[in-house]
Image (cartoon, rainbow, N blue to C red; front, side, top):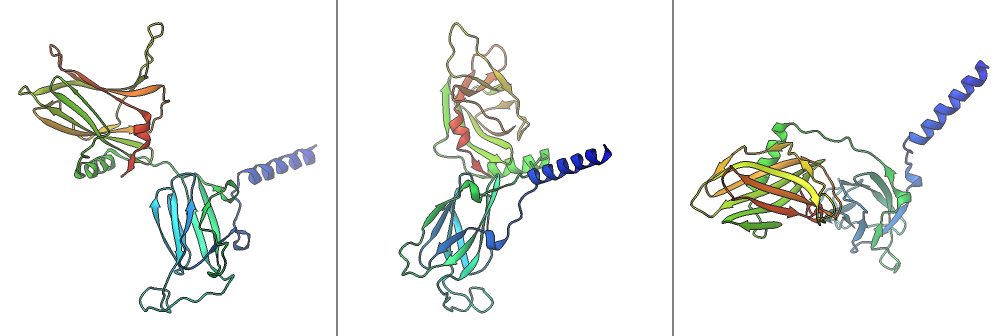
Length: 289
């Protein structure tokens, strides 16, 4: 009985290890990508690329967009592999000239770059990373202190506000605008400006953020989910003309049937309140800090 139980436990442990262990990659098993001098190879990722590694100086590249890595053969090298002395690079058809590694948000993909001469009319100019080439990875989620969040917020404030803000609302000589949306790890930063075009200063009683139904029907109740910023750069409750602030939230999502509602409310006995709706598509267009 003990032998059977031990064998069962050993089999279960081996099975779980096989299911959870990341497969080791061997160079000979990597898929090949053909590349030719004078022709850029574009690697298209299904999600934003976090990191690209080119194993040799024979290859060079850049990222024209967050989802595309552009790779090409280096034109000239010196004997140390550095671009100092202009010396033409000579390759022979079929030579392996490096390993290309692309890391996305949830995967790593690696390829062998193989040289093909210009006479080969079938040289590939772009590839989409396929599921079979992806190895799953999971990055540890970052947790930032208020000091770090303040630094990121100050970096945003140093940027000039966009001439065309994402959203803008006017009411009773008040302007509220969403200058831009930024993202860092699992944090969303809202860059907002408030303008008072009257001669009366504005005393803020509350600034409320919530997720609400886009369309409210009489027969149903509006479902409102309140959002509370984890951090805000300025704690000012009073401004005369202009007031810019950064509000930081933990990453959130909401469907197209809902909107993010922002309400600026003045102290009691005043009717100078203003609200602004933000679609989720505005959040999806967030820039990285």
